[in-house]
Length: 352
Image (cartoon, rainbow, N blue to C red; front, side):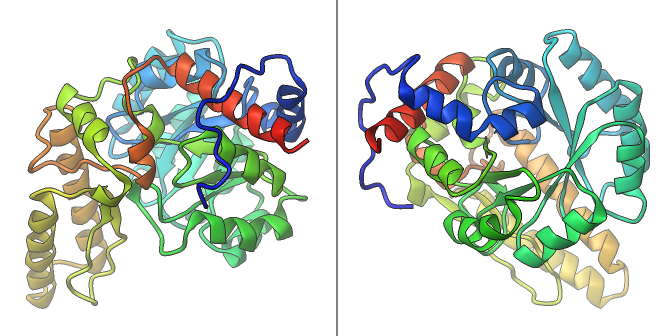
């Protein structure tokens, strides 16, 4: 999306026509999420935990726990600790390839989680039904129009379309192209949240005008005061520009690796070596493809933890979206959301 027309220092526009227009545009999203603003927190492993998730929900957004590689016991504790910190709605993001997906769904049901987000590919057979039968609203990721239509037929309640500008695992298509491809065909039928490369309110306003019900942001919240990310991790974000957030490279065509966008460091080379190691195990019949994929996921979880929790930003994975260049300071979640809302409202008001 072009930077032309951005409002560098948006004037305060509280209770103006711009804010009213914004409220009207994302009303479907706020009603679906049960939040004041239709801004979902992206599920970032090790970052999107009880403190940040509850802070986003308490500030009027919609926090989402990143289950990632958690086992059911850890997720059970995380949900309980999040609920102890907020009375407002929040969701849980589950990875479809998790070997204990069924048990994780049960944990969400036990706590009455109102929204479950499935990420990482088409939901396995029965997962959609299990989630919905327990009363939760189901949100799924759709990286293409055909998949969006398939998910709608399968009964999901909302979809997220996330472009390649996002941090972490990414697809090959940009957010602006996905929005043009998908929104005109499905937004009338199902709430759609746009994600990937969104760092300012003007972009939020534009996607809402295209038909989105809301947006999802991850990178923008990493340097929030409430984020537990290590100081080194946050400093890496504050120093980085959009060009520093690059996707990983697939070494062996036989090993389908979903690219991961992160800040350039020694980890880039280490992952290439890891791929070669796993490919050799495949050659020697010492690994099945499914196990190879799972090993890569565990690898990323460990590399991300080293960076987020331990502060090793050289050999850990500093996953970040291209909007990282718009993260310029540490501040409270409430201030981030207020600024995004004011920017979006100012943009809408300036267009009349």
